[in-house]
Image 1: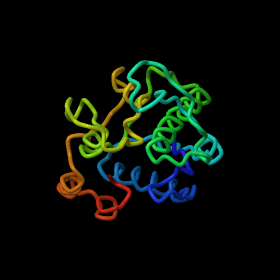
Image 2: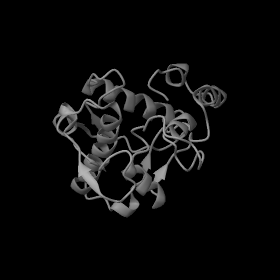
Image 3: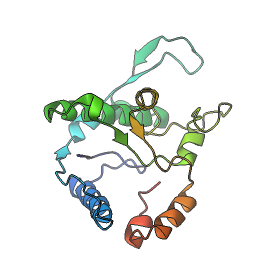
Length: 186
């Protein structure tokens, strides 16, 4: 499944075709190693869902109670921190909808993501360090993702690696240079 029209770091929406091509590159790389990967890639246009996506947030940065507020929609939000949380949570919500539409058992679904060590450090994730201060949240470490992690539903094979280490590992595994050096990795 490839959810397309995701906002990138520059604030632009990526093209559907680009996401599809990225998914195919990954599938082809796996095929080189004899891995049988389900090639039924479902590409869906979710620009409207992201554009109008919202999430729940703490009442304020200082408020440590469980009280929450609904964020503005992504298209009305100016806070980079809130935008990242909306994007991450909207992705999970859309993925859950698609899983339901595909009649896949939710307990048989795992989220595989390219979380790197720096993502966890910057997000002050307990996985990286229990004492870190938040620098910025990453779309792959929102509250919904953390909940899925606690349920054992997230696969993050690169979470202990920094970007340069991940690229070295990819090269040592013989992955194609075009895949290892892609700017969207990490």
